[in-house]
Length: 360
Ligand SMILES: NC(=O)c1ccc[n+]([C@@H]2O[C@H](COP(=O)([O-])OP(=O)(O)OC[C@H]3O[C@@H](n4cnc5c(N)ncnc54)[C@H](O)[C@@H]3O)[C@@H](O)[C@H]2O)c1
Image 1 (tube, protein in one colour):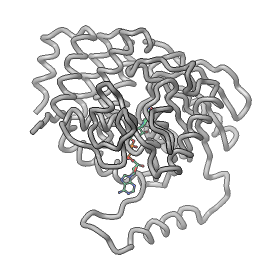
Image 2 (cartoon, protein in one colour):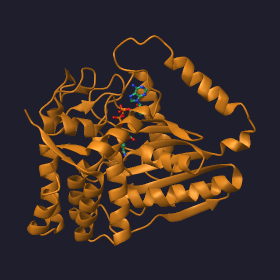
Image 3 (spheres, protein in one colour):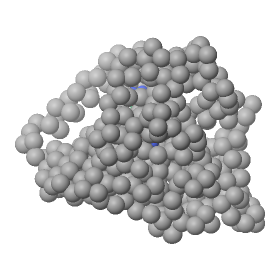
Image 4 (cartoon, protein in one colour):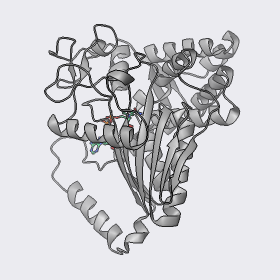
């Protein structure tokens, strides 16, 4: 049985900040990356939390991820802004791009921000939450150019990324409604977490290198590689296609095809086209009442199982409350890989040992 460790959010934040300072990030950048990764772990999405660190350190060593870079406006066309992520940390480039979009939405009521060439922007819900915190609805189409992992419906090998889709709807004095998922049946990071834990993944998520169904996450970690399947068969595939085109082609970035394959699993880049709407501009005074009425209605359906009926975003909010109180769990394999990455980033062994004392 592969158990793990637990670490309080503020300690994990300090550790990640220190790690990226050693890697060469300025203080502000290290802090923004730590904010994002810890928030992903708190929300329950361990696939996009601290477990990404080894991959980021590898990407940096290979010359893909560029430190201390910022988003650069390529075109400003009123309500629409196109932004080059400059291979910067996605946690910095997306923050800056979404801030630009929010400013535009304040001005115009509706805005679109198209970000391309950002290094991994992580959990997309984080960017939606940034919009919701400012009072806005947002819709995000994301692609992962050059890094195919998902097979098309009726295909037998990987042709595109896990292309997440995300929508947020803010609510006064309540958590926003948040849809945020990969268009693959499961996120790639979840195969990594399952592999580290020695677990199988659910049926219907993976095929092996021969195109045969499997539940073994090793097919996504060690050659010969298999592929993820899209969720809901042709529907997930269709949505993934729109994420590829809007997130990649429309944003001024790349889509995945023969000429853009980069061959490195650690060089994760994202394109993201985001539409931001000011709900107040719709002039619909019943909006909140109707939203609450719908939520109460669906939640009053007789439960099929022991677990409660949730609305989108509630799973994350519940995890946040539990993990803030009890600490963030990390499996041993992930924690070991993160510690090795810290040493690789230049953290002295003695400093690492001090952080190791904080886990329980
Ligand atoms: N940057 C990238 O390239 C990239 C690629 C893929 C995925 N991701 C991120 O990975 C994360 C994980 O993706 P995933 O596909 O594993 O997500 P997932 O399968 O865990 O689905 C999460 C969504 O389902 C909702 N949900 C969960 N349980 C629910 C329930 N019982 N009732 C109603 N709604 C429920 C959540 O609130 C959330 O909206 C996401 O944050 C995504 O943005 C990023």
